[in-house]
Length: 207
Image (tube, rainbow, N blue to C red; front, side, top):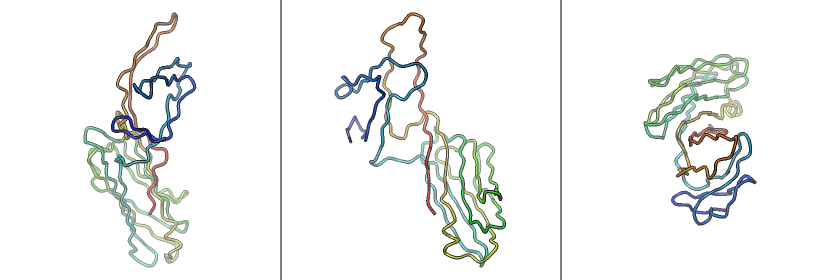
């Protein structure tokens, strides 16, 4: 519950059963005999203030009784030395959408960007293989409806859902200072490395 370690405040920490916590409170050290295969050593949450890697700015403007234009601007808040990889942004549209056209603005150095309206699923899919830190990308979608737009129909727009990963980036700033293998075991040849990656599982912006 809300313990401070350096400049990072962690909430609801939980550890794998194999972890020895005897040195964690004072020395912030975890020791364990790892089971075979991949496993999660520690889970935690952040509920305090922290800087999100991306910010989404949506806007909807009615351009006629049966049409409107959606503008979605996404800003990468991390430093230019980092980038988002395999970025996918989904925008659900109303069920009565008859057509939608997409156009991209400021899509430079992003690696094969594309945006398409998927009529069968009534949504727009916007993908970018590389989203540089410190940059801003914008998508405009012109939507035509089968009938006049109402407040109920407007509520069917969104929410915007974003999936991404950021190599060598950690939102919480919690770092592994060192990783040491305490003893050699016969017939066991471990590999030692530390790799940071930030992945989104539920990154949503409501319209």
